[in-house]
Structures are given as structure tokens and as C-alpha cells.
Image (cartoon, helix red, strand yellow):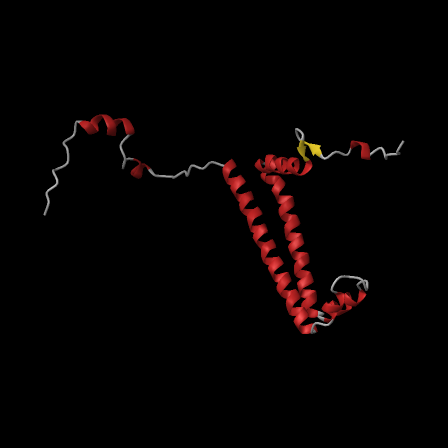
Length: 164
């Protein structure tokens, strides 16, 4: 008989009404999207991740030789290690900065998406009706609805249209 660790016995590929764990996690995430306060920790995580990637980009800009040193420290059987080492260091820095800027742009877009989702959920929870504050002078501009519909039929019709 095969020995199994006690915690592996509870591991399963299904959850949430027999869905796959990935599908169940997506459903659970969608379910908890009504709560705007729970989006803020994720938003903070995204900001932190963005800041770390910015630090990497700044490090590459300030210390361009660190890339070559990092590549030298990779194991000799690392794929394309020798090819990358043979590239001009200035060209390598530009390629890496271009790649990092593409990643930062995408992460910035995702941050914007999460912020807009937060604003949407907060706006949905508040009243969608605009309240106009008026003085007594402006409240008499429109008659009550009942007066306008009942008495409106008894008034004279507008003058006929005359073509020029």
C-alpha cells in the first residue's frame, strides 16, 4: 500500500459545485466583486507591483552593467545564455528597457481597470439620481404633472403650421 501524506488526501481538482478549481476561483471572484472595499487591497497590491517594476527599470537604467553580471551568474546550461552574452550591452539595455516599459504600460492599464471597477461599484451602491437644489423662485417654472396632463387637453391647440 502506498503511503500518502494526510494533507494530500484532501486535495481535489474540483470545488464550488463540482467545478474545476480554476473555474470555481473565477466564480468566487465574480461573486465577491459586489464588495468595493475588497478591491482596495488588490489595488494596493497592483500599485506595489508597479512600483517594484519601476525600481527594476530604474536599476537597469542606472546600472546597465548589472545585466551582464546577472547573465554571467546564470547556470551554463541556461537556454540562450551565450547568445544573450554576445549582444552589445547597450543594445541589450535598450531591449530590456523596451520590454519593461511594455510591461509597465500593461500594468498601468490593469491598475486603471481595477480603479474604474472600484468607482463603478461605489457609484452603483450610491444613488444614481441627481438631486438639484432649487429655490422657491424656480420651483414654479413647471406645473405639477396632473395639472399639465388634465388641463392641457382643454387649452387651445397651437396655431397651424404655415409653409413659406
